[in-house]
Each structure stands twice: as structure tokens, then as C-alpha cells.
Length: 308
Ligand code: SF4
Image (cartoon, rainbow, N blue to C red; front, side, top):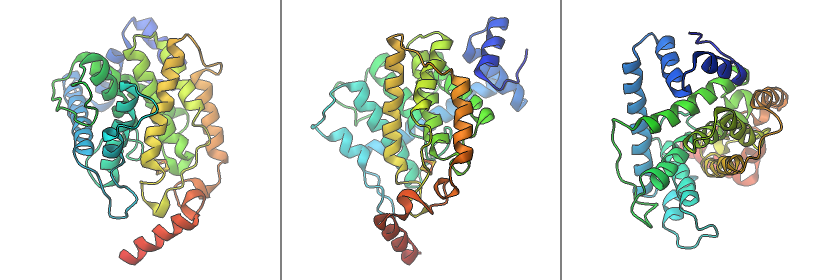
């Protein structure tokens, strides 16, 4: 079996010729690349999924406050608010979960870099929001009270994480997953594509439609600056996780309505690489441009330097 691929087109050709479901292929590939058994990979996947669930619980059970003051419990505030313009459980959970996990990261807690720490709320946030809403509905009216969910995990849940991972593999090979190289399109943008692909898969869309959803989401994050205030992965990162999660939800909803991306996923990744290469260095994670050098951004930077 061929385990090296660079594009969606190559991945599709392999799974079609092998007549194998894409998550099964993903696990076999990972075992091959890591030189371990498939059982070991499944066990590691479960361990990492458990980390995401625990981060989610931590981020919602108490407001997360960082030393810088840039992170101050947005997830709990959102989940416990009774004022919402959009009253849809999947939407509310998606936003709350993405914020919760990323606030835990901002406060030095344990997360899975999926694909990076700064974007760590988007993929698990959306997959768990879908899971708690559609597969195992949580107690009604409790988006801020998430129950533990321990391994071993259902194959379908693992599959969603594996499909997201394969989407990330293609972006990593065709462009980058580093904000310092490609701006935030490479972190939150990539995570949105990964999450859209996974949710479309959970919604039982064919593989081509899943990657069309990924393309739709990624297209709408192209050119995103990486300009973290005070060099901390907090602003704009935490709230951006929520915004990009909604971006991915929209991509999946469009896909379920048979609306396709005109530009194929592989070409969007190509465009992402071109755009990343042409972005100025000041908005590639070194905090010398954009939001980082606003008067407010510089005030936080000076406060952190004085506190050091
Ligand atoms: S703004 Fe930069 S540091 Fe923050 S999530 Fe995006 S790429 Fe990461």
C-alpha cells in the first residue's frame, strides 16, 4: 500500500484503488510512518482525544484567567449567558468549546496541538460539540457543563479525528502549519479546514464533499495575519478559534446543501502557500505588526515586560 501522498487527489486515488475507508487508511499510514502497530496508534489516538476532552471540561468548569490579563474566562461567560442572537445548541457548543480549549492553552494548561497550540480549540471543539449535540446529547441546556468521556472511544469519534489529521497532513505538505511561516491561515485557517472535513465526514458526506467543505473553510481564512499581542498566544488567538469554528460550521452547512467549492482543495492549499510566502514578516508571529503594535497591544507588551 502506498503511504506517501502530498495532495487530496493522491489520497483519493490511493483509497479508491485500495477500496479502503479513509480513516482505516489513516491509521495504517500512521502505524507505518511511526513504525508501530495499529493497536499502538489507536491507543495513542485515544490518549490524545482524552486530553482534548479534559481540556474542554477544565475550560468550562471555571473561568480561565491568564497572567497577562488577555484571557479572562470568555468560554464560561459565553456558555453561561442567556443572551444569544443565535439559539442553536450545536452553534453554542461549538463556540463555547473552541474558546474553552484554547483558553486552557492560553493559561498554560494541557492541550493537543491540533494542528498547533494556538489553534487547538477548533478541531476538538467542533468534533466534541457535534458529538455532544448529535451523537450523545448532553443534558439539555447545559453547554457549559460537559461530562467526562473516557476511552476507549467509539470508532466513529476516532475516525473524525483521523480524517481531520489527514487534512492537516495535506496542508502541511503543500503549504505549512506554522504561523511564523504562513501567518494565521496556516494555524487557525488549517484547523478550520481540518474541522470542516471531519464534520462533513461525521455527517456522512462522500470524501470529495468533505474536502470541498475543507476548501470552503480554508478559502475564507486565506491571508490571515499572525500578530499576537505581547508575543502571547492569546489575542487574537483565543477568540479566533471561536470565529474559525463558525467558519467551518458554515462550510459544512453549505456542503450539506450541495454547494461546492469552485476551487478544489489542492488548489486552495497551493494558493495558501503563495499567499503565505508573500505576507510581510511583521505579521508572521514576531509581533512587530498588526494588532501587536496597536496602542493597546503595546500597553500589554510593556506591562508584561515590567512584570518579568
Ligand atoms: S495569531 Fe498567530 S499565534 Fe495566534 S493562533 Fe494565529 S498563528 Fe497562532
